[in-house]
Each structure stands twice: as C-alpha cells, then as structure tokens.
Image (cartoon, rainbow over all chains, first blue to last red; front, side, top):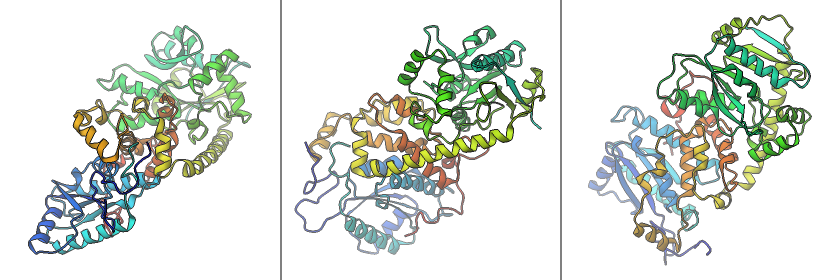
Length: 157
Length: 376
C-alpha cells in the first residue's frame, strides 16, 4: 500500500477538508519561564493561534531530544521548545544544556536533509506574555507556510 | 627523545616479528597479560583473547585485516567492574584506541593499569572477504598489505577506505608499518613514559636509524588519499541518502534487530531506551496508529531508533563502521553515522579519541556560545 498523502487526519492533524493548511504543533515549555509567560498571555487576553499543543516540563533541560523526534516522526508539523533566557535558568544551567542538545539535534536533522527549521528553540521569560503570544503567531505562520511535515502520513517509517 | 626502534625481520616474516616482539613483553614480565587477536584453532579466523602465557603468542595475528568486534568494548568489559592491579597490554587498531578513549571518558572503562599498544592499520575486510582471503593465501595480513600498498583497496570495508586515522594516537607503544619497508622490518616507538619503561625493560635501544620523517610523510599521504575517498562518499551521501524519501529507502530493509547498536563500541547503555518498557504498547495503540495512516509498519519506529542512536553517540562516533558490518540486511548505516558524526564533531570542535582531557560535548556547556539557538 502506498503512503497516504493528503486529506487524511494525521496523528495531530485536522487538515481534512480545510482550504488553508493548519499545522499541528507541539510546544515544550519550562515551568518557570515560558509556561508562566503563557499564563500571562492568557490572563492578559492576548490572542494567538490554537495550533500549539503546550506541554509543561519542569525545565527545558528536561526535554529529551527523543521527545522532539517522536513528535516529528508521529506527524507534528513543528516542535517548539521554550525555556528561560540563558543565565536565568531556575536550575542554574538547565537551558545551557538544552541549547547544546537542541543544536546537536538540529544538526542531525539538517545533515540528513530533514527540515531542522521545524524545530524552534526560544527563550521567553515569565514576564514576556506578549513575546509568548507573538512567538506562537510567528511559529504557526512559519509552519503553515512550510506545509505538512513530509513524515506525517508515511506508514512505513 | 622517545625510544623509536626499527625491528628487523626477514622477508615474509612480519607477523612472526611482531609476535616475537609481543612475546618478549610477556617473557620479560614487563606486562602481565596481553589482549590481542589470536588465530583460532579452526584456522583462518582470529578473535581477540586475553593472553597470559607467552607461548600462546605464536598464534597471535595482530595485523590480520579483520575486526569482528571492537577491542575497545572488550577493554571496557575487562576494566568496568574493577581494574586489575596487574598490568595488561591492549593491542588496538587506531579506531579501537580512539573508541576506548571515548569509553574511558564515558566512565565505561578504566585507564588504570592498561598499556595501549597501538598498531598501524591499512584497513580491514568484512568477515566474508577475510574468509575468502584466508582460503587464497596462508598470509592474509601480508597479502592485503601488499594489495593496499599497490593501490588495490577493493577488499577494504567502506569505513576503512575512508578512514583518515591509519596511525594510532594516544598509544603508549606504537607499532608502525606505514612508511616502513614491511618486508624488512617494523617500527616500535614509545609514545609515553609507560611505553618508554616497557621498551627499556626489553632492552630496546635506539641504535638503528628510524625513518620517522618518512613515516610522517607516508601517514599524511595515506590520510589524504582516504580523505579523498571520504569526500566522494559524502557526495554520494548527499544524493543517495538525504531527504525523507532517500532515508526511508535506505532504512527499508531495517528490521529493528538493533545489531548495529550491539556492535557499536560506543553504545554502552545497559538497557537501551528502545528495549525499555517505554516501547511496550497495548494493541489499541498500534491500531490507533494504523487507523491514522491507513497502516503502520511493524516493527515500528525504525527511523526513530536510528535518529535517537545518532543523538546518543554520534558526537563520539569514531567511524569504525562495525554498525554496518553487523547489519543482517546490509543497510548502509555507516555513511550516515560517519557524516552526521563529523558534522556534530565539527560544530563542537571535538575530535573523538584525540585526548582524555577534551570534554564530551554533551556533558558540558559554555555560557557564551550557540547564540543562534534561541534567536529568531
């Protein structure tokens, strides 16, 4: 059987029957900064697209790269990791480790000709609700432009 | 000035010459045992063995162009629980030595009381090719040496054809073949104080003119020609392997046996994440995946496995290519690991096996670095 191409609901997808492609996005946000910024964005009623599925983690350093790979292989159109700005990690150095790990992960994807721009890392502090909302808008728009993740509907991966 | 001696041998007696050098180390009790490939009683094939009786070294074949298992792994098994108080010499190819340096840094082996005897390597064959070579000639090591020196690399494994490290680094004692007339002799050089004391104890004194300059030149030339091969491999990699379609086609024969991981000297986890309960799913989960895409390939997650393995070990990948040798279905995994490893190593300015002092890239960080990660 051929891999199914278009018009099928992917694991996170609701692409069927829509004119414009709506990306399915996964976000890993640290408890202390980016998740708090998400709360702030919410309480200040800032609008951002509903495409993002936020997952709160205690630290961006707790995001094993395999989580990101798993999401991409399962058909997520993009993954964004949000952490405290470098120097401000609640656990002192977790985000510095995130930075090396994600740089490595992106290099692996890029070298294999997989789209590493589907993985974003952003430092968004607790007070930056507006930046959170803006970043989610930018991320959604960028992934919408890219179109569906080519791994999305491959049954044979 | 390190001790550096040319040990002369008669024509066609290279193996015997190296063996008697090794034997003298045990006979003079400079070391208590040697981990070295021995020819098996059944003939032809060699396997690494821990040798305590010097008489056994008549069967040694450290130059045999075959590497069924990385000795780095064996040195890890030997020392991981508790290193011995006795001194063990480990005879290693350059890639095995580099892998062992990585394992020591990963705390999977102990440097204590090990003496590294590094041997120049012109490359190794697959088990099949080695068996064939053994049937053709009683002296496969010398035969392959001759062929490779005359430019015929057809019997070498892919990994060896593109290896730029034909000479050992970080050895205590180096056994040199490159740039030496191996019909007449081979080079023995002390590369550390430990190695120096062993050679002194053997009564080896620098009496013969040693072609060190010529050797350096020959090593550089060989490395350059291998680098050329490597760049050709990378060009093919760009065309044949990159991109979703190519990758899925490369892995199409993968059956998730994980033999590549077993053979890899650097994959050391006692329980691999992919063998863990994380990947035990209920039937409903599989059915859900099947429904979402129309079908799900089983066993599942082979691309995820390879990507994750790259993520775990490619910063330390020494490019030995044993992953590809271990594959029952000839999946060409070697170029992927070599190329991705090189890109990662370049990014972190890291060379696996270069030094025990270099920090493992994913266990440290700098405050001022990688500013591009996190910036829009």
